[in-house]
Image (tube, rainbow, N blue to C red; front, top):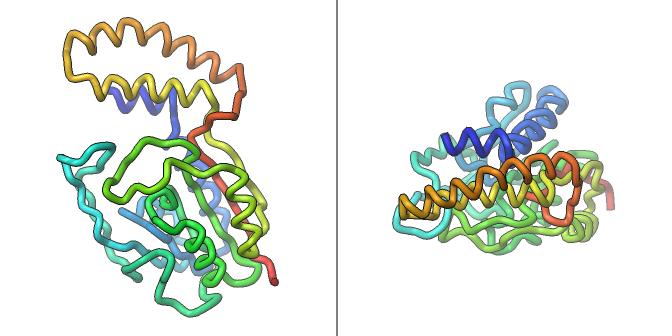
Length: 233
């Protein structure tokens, strides 16, 4: 019930999934695509028209005793490459497309990851990235950054011969606040306090929902969605 509520009024994941699906479905037939840091491969189903390769370090296992957000029932599926995302065992300029979604905050060397993607992507090829701007710790112990700014993407992509074709933000100030207010219900153990919090929260949810539709303040967002083209040096 709580997840349905969150998805309907503060749709961080919902908006991101729709965006990724649209971009993937518009890629050229039979393009070689690397899903880097693929996790459970949620986007493989949108790559039926592509030559799909999966990469992940392969060692994540949910720990119920760990702090932060975790995910039960974790299954990687078949991986073509297992190891560090900044050092993938494949020849230069092999892929037409690299997809990397919500991964950069989980690697200690994000700059080197973009450098590696530049090595792997053909000239004229495509890099598709989503990453948070501000997020809570999750998937510990593999959490290193709470997010990345628009300026970081512009600087690092340009340095690694990527021209940004599209960069869009996901959410705004009030949709972000709305999501975190709802998340507050999960961290309250006392039934009485949860009840009192809910009473106060309902009018706040309604107000923030309408403000998120009217006041487009993008100083605080869930994250960024980027499509970039590899250019020749």
